[in-house]
Image 1 (cartoon, rainbow, N blue to C red):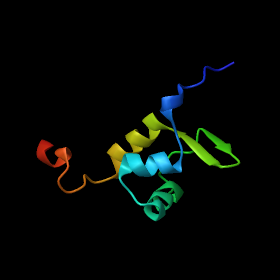
Image 2: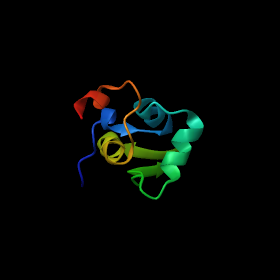
Image 3: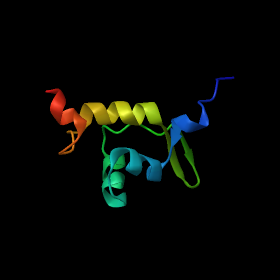
Length: 74
């Protein structure tokens, strides 16, 4: 049997919105994009993603927000 990820590694849509700093509608748009990772599992209440995969996706596909620390790293 495969080892389950720790609970703090699992995120739903609301947690993804908080991680990415996006409103509910924008979060849903991002999650529907072809490049967004597939859910780790789909439950009756919606998908559940691995936080590490969401953050890796964000690092690759999203521009830094104005005023973020990432602006200073160029």
